[in-house]
Image (cartoon, rainbow, N blue to C red):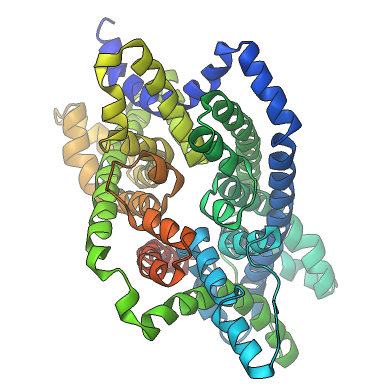
Length: 538
């Protein structure tokens, strides 16, 4: 019994690492005083209504747009058969490789007043003034988010429909239901939990975004937190805004988890028989399907990449080649360290869940699963608040130096956000390892570490590699936490792309932005191969 606390010590340390930033944000309300109340009242009378209204409008528009685009694409490639369907099945995932802020930079560079399109129109037709709507606006941000985040909805809806929709729609057809009624009464109700879960994920990404909102000058909670901390130097205001954003994200996370539970019952495992094939489309229907599937790929991936390739093709000399390797090395170094630590923590958690799934283990695993929903700006506040408190109480400790002048603080923030990504992949690998192997190993005298090292790890290598890759890519694209917590003169590709775009050097921002897109393509390709190999349909 006395050894039990020692066995739980690594789990408790992991729980402390993952929970401290959130507890610090919530704990800021315990230092409530008259000054704090005055700050909150001033925000309520000035900026808070704008933050709330803008965030609400943005979420409603993005949620509706992502649901329509993602569901339409998933229904087209799952329920219908037309030339090019196999290509669109994986092509619709390509916008996952595009960080939303990179899409924003690309469209701004091409469509702004001084951009090549409006310049060509004025020169060609003798026109004057602005010819296109302002890209850097709330509608522009909605369009960027919709065509960057709809794959969350597409992926879940496609998985839900591929399992059961073909059989049930065939049964409805045999009962005399026309195609429109089959879609309305069978396919859409079946996909509703998946749509809800996908929209919730897209909205969490929207609320967590800093790059698009900051570059477009949109007053959201994320930009408000950043402004309150760094521009106004007001930690209490930043903590209060971070708490409000955290509450909204927690509500969205609850909706997503509830939808995922309903999705388990909605999705079956039966294979579609020969009589339950996708409905063939003729010329008119095929054209509509091509438009439904091709437009999101064009707007979310093809055009942004083409816009960023234009500066490379026009003049290579203006691109920052001399410092590109330095930025790449900083990104690779942070990504590699964070991925290795995240996989190690995920393997430990998954192993303990398998061997002794007690209350402490399950609680720590749930905390790890919640981390991905915490926006980067909230993590920044949650990490810097206790640093400030400790620095004031213990000036000679040097805690501020270790958290802001080294990679400790930024890696900590990465682990809080991305351990959940690694844990999901490792747990999926554990699910494929029979429990009988553990019993056989113990009967042969292997202890706990021996079972993990000699039985589990050889079978988990592919899942651990996938987990490391996903964390690595997420770290490469993370912007708000990196922007604030990175050590001095340790710019990454994401930070440099943001800074160059902010300085209106969009042509130079194309090089680091394209590098991020190339890195993001790796997990998208692996995901598309996995989906094509899954026996969802014959």
